[in-house]
Image (cartoon, rainbow, N blue to C red):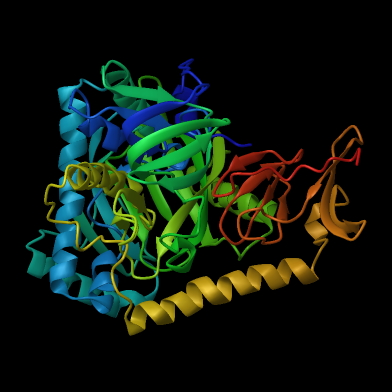
Length: 496
């Protein structure tokens, strides 16, 4: 599969694979920014902690993000205000500011070299229909006491109709940051870290929970589910509170860097930033964001992103990749206890593409909740928060209709034209299967049904994977799971 620009900085870091049963106070499932931020708070505390990463470190959502630490997040504040109230908006804003402060403090305290750069952040639009929304966002920013500007010398485009700019935001290299966190965590006596250790099931037993990974049992008093998307439906019913958005991203080597990052207010999203390391400057460009049930011609989406990046820079991108984000129907993350019945199981997901700030603050929220300490954000991010009419409407549109669309499309259109005779969906012995022929003519046959919630899979001819258009699971051509929420492979035993 395509790798992000950040993954070139992974290095040769390796960790043990879970191979024996164990007991711990806290089990953290997931080694992205949320899992490692949570573990960081437990360094040298009285709790014993085990952290399990399903794959190798630096392969997940965090390492495919654009790496922004900003509190200006398109027109997020009015989105939240339209569902809730100003007090909720204020708490979300303060959480983003705290997330930035925490990340900066961690970087400084541990001397982490992650290319942290202060930058301007802008939200902009070329659509006259968006102007009223910008006026509303400015009203909310005024109430929050945020100093903003209506233009930027770093953006020169006559087609832009509105700009909101704020200062004192940051960008960084997320892989270098996670490497720094891991280095500090690894040296802690009370935290054990494992990779290639995918948790497939959690079972409640008396006062403990038992998690199963690599045919081993991990007994824990408290569990943090910090993978980008949970591998279970009950408890929490996360698939009914969220949907998945997919984006296409490129990084192109350019002559100079600018201290600005930006995002459009309207959909589909366009986002950009610059990145400088010791040797080169890059322009990072994101577009073609959509619900994963839409725009299923992956090659076309890649090609459009590459073309637009080339139009801007005059050069062919050096890197291209995709990322998937968990979106909530009320624009607020889900951070906290997963249910009233399972008060010692915690979750953090649904960052709505703003995972760097929300993942960082989630680590502190979860740390406080596990210790039974109060946190000012626990109620506003509570995953069990009640439904209202707007959330229900968004649930019908984003979750029910989207998943129905994905299921129906893949049921009816089994062999889209972009497969180019290299892959197809058919039935063998009454079972729905996907077949891919590699360049040598070898046949790779898998089940075409996702083990997670039984959605039908679509072939991704760029990454050579079978992708779930409902919840984002991905499998290689031989049926091995490469991204959750599915915990299980889709291999077919042809000897039977």
